[in-house]
Length: 260
Image 1 (cartoon, rainbow, N blue to C red):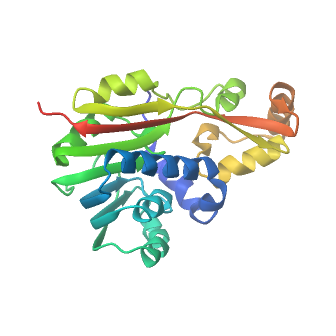
Image 2 (cartoon, rainbow, N blue to C red):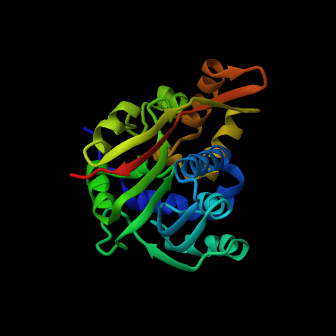
């Protein structure tokens, strides 16, 4: 059973990192690039009439897609309404017929565009509470043969933090995602990778995760002694040749709407 995620906390954390996210989220940017390449491989025409992006954030995936594909109407959704301004810079660089921003939690939004050709999401689904409900909702709004393509993270993600603090998101494995999504979609691509980022110090690592808004893992307030203990343990357990390391565990999935 996956514990419920505090969406207000998630919104607040990402709102505070709107300016710093793009510069720090190097793994998420690489995931956006990899996902867009998968989409282009699966749809050689690289042309879509109606696209919905879930969790558009600062526009990394939007830029990768619009740099490769022709899109008539692009719908972008994000929990942080203010992130819409971050997308304008992408729209200034790439041509798109129409653009619509849908602010709010994708799990509770009642009105979504229908007959979508493509639904995409990068590094977002780990923040959802009801993944089966999400897959069902997307199934209902895709046209026959439409594509859902997304990245998220697996159980090894930021395992160093949870090893010390005993907290972390309840990530799905790739096989669990395939099982859930397989009720509604024919899976065409599913793969995973493990990446190790290195930092000069535990302090630099903490700055990185705070600057990307993912520090919901560290929601408790720290005393000075607790903070120093964390730094000491991190150095002791996760040192590398150049400092310390942090693990990311990206998952990539692409699937077609199943005929039920």
